[in-house]
Image 1 (cartoon, rainbow, N blue to C red):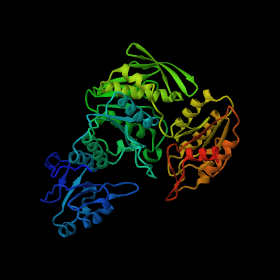
Image 2 (tube, one colour):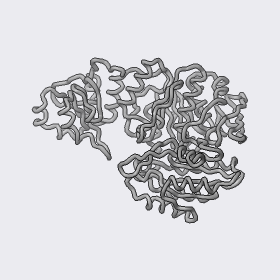
Image 3 (cartoon, rainbow, N blue to C red):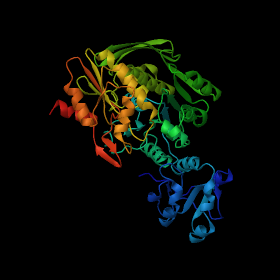
Image 4 (cartoon, rainbow, N blue to C red):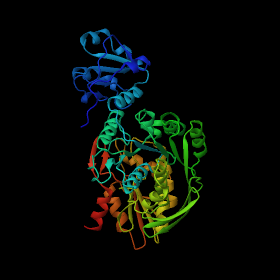
Length: 496
């Protein structure tokens, strides 16, 4: 594992008023942690309030583990009374009005190395595919490259990381993120594309990452359980361009979304360079997309020059993902002709319209827009009936459930409603909320049985989409992560 510096001068943060010491003792951290269980002797514990886990309730545990410093939000100052300070005289205590931002700044100072070229990708759908495609294009241009997100840390030329059960956040906490950045730099990997989630942006996890470019994919209903309103959700994503990116870095924007003008104006105000892409793209214009068996012929106009290539993936949205990745690579200084040639060799992302067997696709589409795109993408490849099997996750945005039921009713010929990751909700109630707008659908609680039923009913020319879980290798029921893989279930049915 990489090592942070032996000392880290806290005076700049203190002098700038970002950190306020509670007393005269100011230790230097031996390590950093936002989890009391991982606090090391002499390390700093940053007590971050949260909805599921509140770090301020674990201060005593961190102290008992030998913490050398404690940082708490200003409003929790009273928790650090004289009794605690007297009981732990060798510990430095600090308060901050922006404790999440402090965590990011400390992490960047403790792990100061970063790859030279970093691209962040935000938006509702397509982030995983775009960071993967960006990594693949760089690698074909003989550049050392990695991607980070829902699939974990993937370094081109190395095997995919093993499944981790309950996958982590697609934007890691700031300490883990800067550990990864430093590790990549030490391994001489100087190109990284990573997913910037709305949660990660809102929680300041990537505030101290030095970006060269950032992509905005699209914007649709998702994560309202956290953000509450679409306005707050959009504002969280806009932080990437409004606060984190610096002058003369590049924004890659999709012209074909309703939010384009607002994003373009924001970026212009901040003196960001802009690469626009889409059917109305000014920098990269999609002239035509012609579906072929298992692929698509694509024609692009890139800064006035025409390029034609075959994308070995299905679905118009995959063209947008590939073109967004192309824009990111061009923004970072690579030759357009060489980058476009690499697009003809792109490989799909696990669980993103992944062909599990002939005419059977597994996709991660767990939002209304994602489900709509997947079904529309498969329709040109369907000679018979198009069947969709899907559910919705528990303890997540409830508003999208009926909407996804309505989309399935309108765009598929057969619909089977089943369980996704019910978590702590009653799965039957989740299914009923979907069925409210899709009353003629079949309801099969067991995801395994639902997949089996869909495949048994197939006839030549039919296409089946199994949506919602994609690459996941588990099903979350209560506090248990039970092994489950949609692709494996399909292959079991096809090869009993």
